[in-house]
Length: 404
Length: 213
Image (cartoon, rainbow over all chains, first blue to last red; front, side):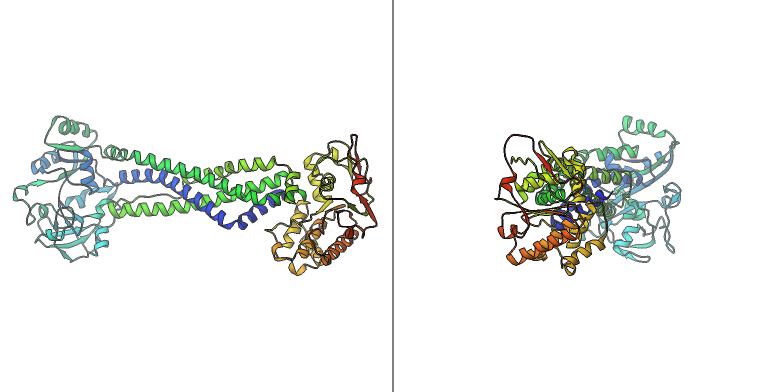
């Protein structure tokens, strides 16, 4: 027991005596471990967050085109709309027996870069964006009237642009903000939505007719919409898939949303693999850095070890000090990697939240963090193996004679 | 290094100087006595312990408890304070008594410097800490390998008298290796190394008097 105490004491002193090298080692290991954990967890968490942020819809009906484009455009307010649908298409799917909810939406305008989405007020009354959760308008606000130039503002937009009840604004034409494309219409903010942690927080909602009849829009398009957000009953998705995607040629049904999102992420699998390879490379560098650090201090401590042995320290005491040094360095490196991961995940999740409105929940202490922590300790022990073996086999007398 | 010592014995509490030229094997002889190096053949009896029969771990343990070693270049542990150099030696010998270490530092006149690191001490002070460290476990045998080799005459006298008086006080035997005649002549008992070491084929017997150091 006392031997371990002496080894630990020797290791701690060696770390303090080589403070700069020790810091560099801990920093590199922390960076490697943090990136490794980040690459591992962020990918999983982002996928999960996107799947949970589909605002409670099963499917989207839109113009003929890419299903992924429809989902990204309708539910995540990214990319452009593939085209327009006729109002009759909405009526047809609304009345289909396999459809439980259908809300038309129209896009085409923005306010200072935030998308304006035209829809019907029922979505804010009937639809549950998450099981058991309806949209809530912060009091004393209210939902817009169907025929008025009124707006209901998403929580993030209100916060970012400082919009409040009673404010008026001019929409701008197009999905991207361009100062010279201002519409003459003036909209009144009548409500602010409570935050949902979904992309709905990132848009301004106005009546469907507002977008359709906005000054400057093509009057011939007044009866068209960008798409329909849908919730389906039971297994009707299969029948609708056949009807729209396989037999029909008028519209595309993006269904099921989770599978489409999954295909989206699979597009980036090369990036995930590259990050994972980089992380493994970093882990290797971390191990080599520990090894180099131990080797360099060992060289300096050769005389110290010989003197200790001459004072009666067993081989296990001096080799134990190398092991402890490695364990301490990797322990602090592992702690540091959790800090790096925390900073990384906070940065990534806040960027995703700000840009897309998807709240990414990255848990700090879970099994992945524990495995990474233990993995770094194991790496430290492995790195110590070579110097320990070399030291264990070294001749005491030779070391004493060479140390003078 | 090849050496052959037919027989050598040392009385309990005696102090012996071993005189010889550099590189002639004196240090190897001390390493054999300390159990740092196992003898190829022959016997070594250290206070009832037959070193040639002990394994490495047992020799380490014996060295930690019963043998003190003073080096020419002091070899204090640079990352540790004077007091810690002593307490670490005590830990290796299975003891923990900082008060004893402090009293020993007081005896060598370095109590005020107990928290100083070796590089903050003068050469003479460093050797005095090294002497205190060698004696901190009240060893039966102290081996001093050219302990005054790096010291000026004033520090040589001071260190030597300190080493001898502490060995006397703690009832430790002392073997001091030197090539400095000024040091050698201060010992009543001195042995010429080239008389002790007879390099020829045969069975060597190293005997440190039975039942004593």
